[in-house]
Length: 364
Image (cartoon, rainbow, N blue to C red; front, side):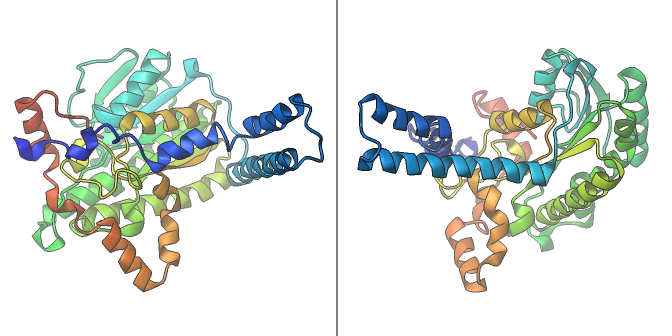
């Protein structure tokens, strides 16, 4: 079963070291205003004159960092507006594809913290049951089942306040190798299901006095496209466009609803099992627990947000600004069009996990 092992670099001692980790450390040290001004105070504690070059340089640096943080805060406020009030004891959180992986992780966290959580999935929950989590067997590609689940949830738990559209599938085949049913299934699960859940749950969210939050999970492939991922990339591009259009509509009709767009690179789940990242430093594989932390933080604080993980996911839209020749070079350097050569998929991941229990089997 060696073909289903993680790439060796993922298990090496330096695997966690990435540009994202470097920036995370910098943001709480040298790039934090508090730390920058502490340096100035340290120089003054040594009775250094204000005119001394070291203290002048440190003051200038501290001012630049402070201005940068201030502008970032102003940018977020203008872009996303004021946060809504959140009371977890009154929150009803709906998660599609929440029977395992990232969805289950978020469901379990909120269930343990006192929120009411409803999980929609076609398969039973991986852990059987979880505290505070109610399972509803539902195929989100079937609009009738989604409408019924929405009514059942509102009857059992109350009006929903948070919707997390997490369900997704991957075929990993060339377009000419896909059959028509596979194309329909990908577009139904990854795109059409978003329309169904939004239509079914937004009226209930709008009735809630707490307002609400809608979380959309998409992929950098929606911006880039990739060989052997034409159906998946097309569906994720549609999801991103849907989110932006919906945000504009809700701003006018339901200003109490916040929207969160989560754009991910390669996630460490069997959805892309076998795919190897070309660079663990510049394009690290994202762990579900890190994604869950950011999503939970946005929901807890009632913020609208645009989350990109890892770092390049926040800037991937700039790819289209590059000249065509540089875009081609970037695709070659990133290996985006050859990465699926080692793809084995969710079924192989499950088989590998039975053969070797230590193999990662999280799903999203």
